[in-house]
Amino acid sequence: MARPATGPLMRRHAISWMVVLAMLCVAGLATRNAQAQHGGWQTVQWQIDARGHVAVTASVDLALSQPVLNALHRGVPVYFMARAQLERQRRWWWPQLEASAERYWRLGHLPLTGAWQLQHSSTPFAPDATIAGLAQRFASLDAALAALAHIGPWQISPVTPLRPGRYFASLQFEIDRSLLPRPLQFDTDSRAGWELILTDRQHLLLDDGGLRPLPR
Image 1 (cartoon, rainbow, N blue to C red):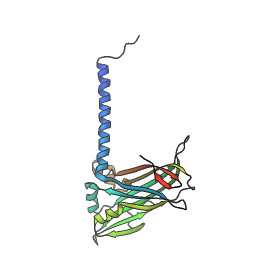
Image 2 (cartoon, rainbow, N blue to C red):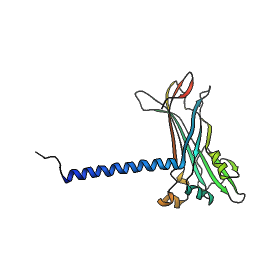
Image 3 (cartoon, rainbow, N blue to C red):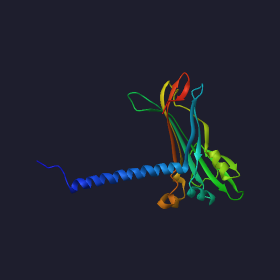
Image 4 (cartoon, rainbow, N blue to C red):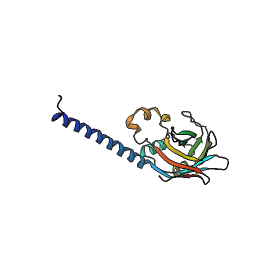
């Protein structure tokens, strides 16, 4: 009959588990630090009108890291993306996607005028695109970031009319790192500080009173 593992073997197993737990704690701390560094959501509100169109309005406390700010001041455009999704909760099945949309921004500096230009579009930007989507110009970077930090009212039309019931809504805002210059895409040290991903998740109820959040 095999004897239970004792002595050095048990100590090695215990040390292995301690290492795993330490790595998980460090990863969680790094995620919280990254979120704190870049800010977070101030408000996220979902609404539905009489025609059944869903809209989300949100504001972000946007605090870009120093590497991102340095790149902007050096003339490197920075791309942002927001993704909104609305899923219907079903008792015996996986949630059903009812509405989804994406929005894109390109923030860059115009050296000839000294202005900051913020372009936004419902379709992805092509690399190095200088003219795409609707554009706004601002005298300062702070003013451009203030405009970027406000989303909506952003209308997201459902595929079919929404029925009363419970829904799961998510809104994500992030830097689109796929459009960064190649050195920033492949150099791990250069990418530090670019991990901006802010996500808001809410459970909503649609009834005669409209679309309203359920307690978290």
